[in-house]
Length: 100
Length: 475
Image 1 (cartoon, each protein chain N blue to C red):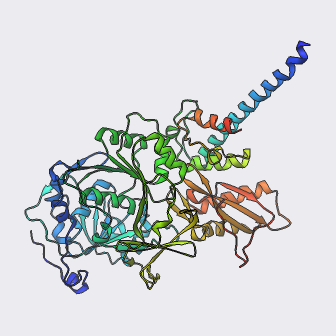
Image 2 (tube, one colour):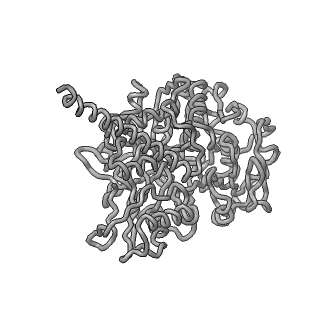
Image 3 (cartoon, each protein chain N blue to C red):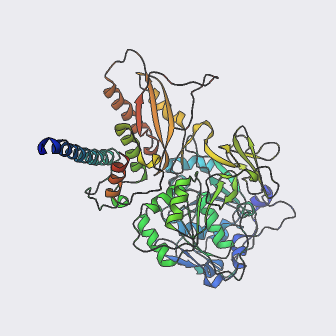
């Protein structure tokens, strides 16, 4: 039947999209948390936000990556074979999505 | 103006008998293409020809002859001018890095025997009663350029961050030992550096520009990276240098103007393969070198083959710089190492054979040595050294903590960051989440932000070495 054949696919897609949304929201929450802890004014988190203009410094990014590793169980920057430095917030999120 | 040799200088004997002191100003005056070269700061620039024959000290230079001068200047360009003016005139220059805390100054003044201060804003409180001179642009012509009277002591601060600041003494000869004279046929290089010129890495680049026939573009502590890179592009910087952490920030910067260095140099931290590869992609066909240098051991060597670590063949060969590995730690002997600590009571930097132990641990893999970290697990957070024991002591001050271990975890933004594992007393007096929040609160209150552990986890036990010490492997 069409429905049963399609159902898992839809569920899969939803679950995948849900994971991606959850991941993004976890990363956004982490940026906000670290900004508060480090007393930095955080710019609105859009995909085009250049990280160095986000209000956070290198130490903040180091803390974000270290604590996300605790929460998510992986650090895509250290594990990556290829060489990648994120320029925008969108790059940063995509790198975690790829590593997932 | 009269530049007389002061009584204190002759009695202290800072010039060794029989050697002619040559000042930085004299070396600069003799360097090639002087008329074409400049020093740029974030908001002003100075022609090297002008400072070679001038002063920004408003007539105070003669009074600083023979003095031990604290250089407490905010603007790096002014600091560079002061160095050109004071070398050979002052007996000693104490180069305060911009982040040196005001409360450290009384100890620094006493330890280094400071009896004069050069400043650009207000004189520091701790030096209010001593001879002071303000440095300010513009540069004015000197009627008489001062002769070199002293082999001036250049006192620099080591990057260690625990306890009172440690200072080491260098001579201009040692500081410039690795600088090759410029060929008159080469175009004058325009150096740019992310370092502050009062740190060893930045000072090397200032001296390279001054002695080696180039210009220099400096940055100031609060200049945004994108602004500095904009100036680097506009001014056509050909030789650009910084730590791997500086370069990682460059790689994260959206280019508004393309920078096109002919030479890229890294030093001051371990340059890992990832940052070297990323730079090779960003700057194709550009030579990329990583140098080993430290405030204590001077310039050791440079690696230009694009690979992390250094060839094993460097060890044991004879030449200006000799390397050996003892107990896994890199040791260096050369004329470029510091003369020693200025602080009394600290052990000699050199052993009986003249080697300086760097404390940088290396491991032989094939035909190459790789840096694996600092002895004792000192963590290098973006160029700032963090002693794990200091953080552990703060964590351990919480009554529910039995013991803790702080280690470095690698990350692409600062090279490493501190993380903590904590063993609690049993039974625990409160839920783990509560205790974690309390411990982190203590850390944030007691420690500088770069020392606060980025991650804190509870563990049932910690690994020990056979000798009963905490095992401090790099994570």
